[in-house]
Image (cartoon, rainbow, N blue to C red):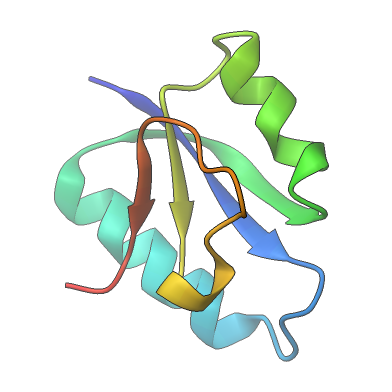
Length: 77
C-alpha cells in the first residue's frame, strides 16, 4: 500500500470541495493517507524528496506545480 499526502494550495478557498475530492480519490486508490498539507508547494515537496510519502494528490490540474515530481496524481477521474 502506497503512502500519500493531499496537498491543498494556499490559493484554494474554500478548501472543502478540494479536500473531499482528494479524500475520495485516496480512498478509491487504497492509499494510506499520511495527512493533508495546506500551503506552498515547498511545504509538501520535502515529504516526497525524503521518501516520507510516495504520492502527492492534488484536486485539479490547475494546481500542478511548475516542476512536478514523480507520482503526483490529480483527483480528476
